Structures are given as structure tokens and as C-alpha cells.
Length: 60
Image (tube, rainbow, N blue to C red; front, side, top):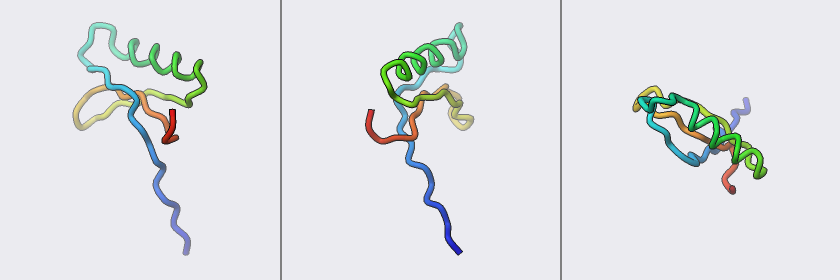
């Protein structure tokens, strides 16, 4: 039986969920990172409540 190693993720930036723009700032930052060649996406940390811009790669 083979088990896959968990994906390596790097948090590029955190944005407070209570910000008036909601996830808009995180989405804009992620889009900018993608335009620069970094595979970035937005997720929400349900435990502490911020929006996180993450990448599955370790170099950016």
C-alpha cells in the first residue's frame, strides 16, 4: 500500500475576513501573483478566520 505525501503549501499573505471588501483583497493579490507566474489561490482558514493566499510550490 502506497500513501501519498501531503502537498507542501506556502502561505504568501493573510487577509482578515472582517475587512469591508471581504475576500476581494485576497483575490486581487492572488491574481497579481498568478500574473507573475506563481500558482496562487485563496482559501479560508476556518480555525482562525483569515483569507489566505497560498501556493502549492515552495518557491515564489
